[in-house]
Image 1: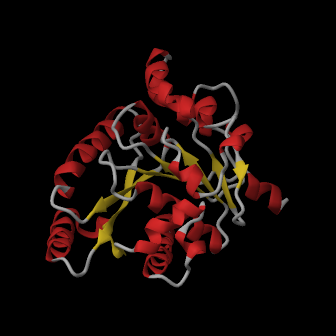
Image 2: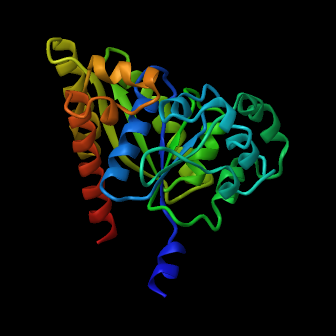
Length: 266
């Protein structure tokens, strides 16, 4: 009875989004998912980026992507029909496919186009967390992710235009909350590509903390060559080199995310 009840519990759905490219969205998605899986959390990565980098980074071969996020989003198949198990215990993937780019054109023709993903999530079970890797744009795919999610995590690169770029995202979040998903919350903002040798990184980090306060995680993801190398081997950095600074940072981030989730649930 307990096992059956557990299977029916809805997972916590977190969209990882920033309309700016190259800020570490996909890297954060696959490594946070791996860290959550490593501590026993059954985790699903939904690759909603047509580039499919999260799928590649988790070792999902192109031959395994015939049933993908596109078919789920358009209602052709149930979400469970696109789930692929990764080689990592407790971690599964709904891969992206090249046809997902066409969804930006097709979805607006639907009734209630903003709710396609939310509809697909109805009845989802068997996972503790779903992480959505969003494309680097505030188009219909990202809007669907925000409407379907419980919370959003924003990776923010430690560079000069970081705050300028995130302002548009915050405005979009507020519009989504007002019109489609009033419970959407910012789970946190994670500073990425931090270079301790660069004074600019410290300045940006300070500005972001002043602006967003305690929404910013204490954990900072460093600029680390091992993190950059790992995707070419189809692995999260936690498996590629679990001792490097990037791996340790993502483990700390996962711990911080879980602490926030526990406080919210209390």
